[in-house]
Length: 444
Image (cartoon, rainbow, N blue to C red; front, side, top):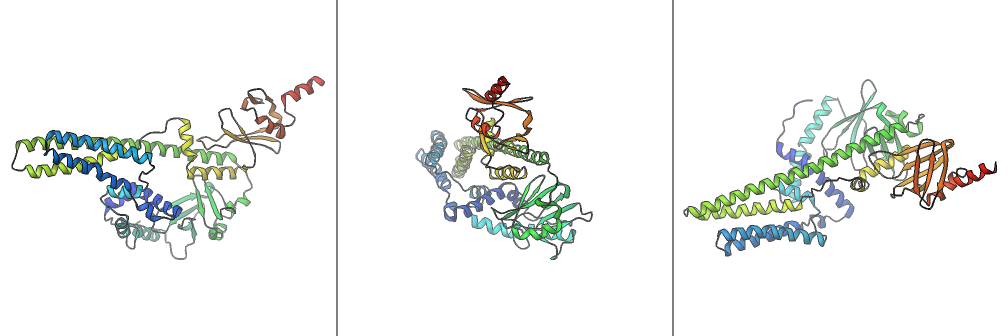
């Protein structure tokens, strides 16, 4: 690929590293709430001025004395904490992370940032268009190259390599960075039409790609053997392994994000300490040199402005890492990405939500059913490992209901559920009741 001259490199790096995800979330919320004005309102920025204004008043009232500086700095901390507590209590916290991030880069409105974004990155002649043209030239992509379309407005060029053992996708809308993704045919599990959501699910070993129904003809041409209805061999291990790899990678991302927040917290603390040292030095200089006292005092006020930013950021940073299984389970079961992957796993394994539910003593939900001579148990909770057992019914010794629980006795293990699970097992395992078997054996 030809070398691209990158202008405004820092702007591009900051966008891709820190801002793009916040921007995507911002526009998702606009679509969801259909109310852009509410999202543009940023009360935390208004509240930011209150402690600073009070601190300046204290400094002026105390005539730039050392005591005044100490009281003013203390007030910055206390008032910022009170504002944070009040915002949490009134549920009035800033929801616009996009606006918050671009302000850190010195841009104080979304409109002005969007104009720069269009000029430097996403618009005509921007970095993404240059990158797309370079890819098109390298891979000989023309207007005749076939396209498929994502449900969120994405467009992809799609083509097979010369060996016909890989499929390549290149996103060709400059809203996102043009990138080529290659998938080995053997690692494409299937594609299917989701009649309920009116879309196509293209499932690979690493991800699910959600496409519009208009993409079906291209997929039928390039991947006919991967059509869900045409799959002849059933390999549940592959689907389970794919999901577990995805979930463990997702956990790494969660942990990495927690580490990044801790690093940001530590860095901001260091910056705050540095600015305190600078303030102390300036105060000391101002007492010794009268000639430049006015300029030094102005510098001190600027330092207080910067201090207020650091204090606010320190208080706002959510740095609590996920530690327990319960915290991880709660987090991933509220993630739409994880929910979608889990639902697709269940579809691939032909697991229906209509199957009976039983619960462990800890409250974990399992789906259970009997089909084709096998007793099935599936943990219906999103977790990093999949719990799915298909046990020959002849290997189920019995189920036994006690005053405390219901136990399934297998050849090599026991499964323990809540007592009311016995009602379900009496329906799907009618000849495995412990008391019935005992009476039957005694009668013999």
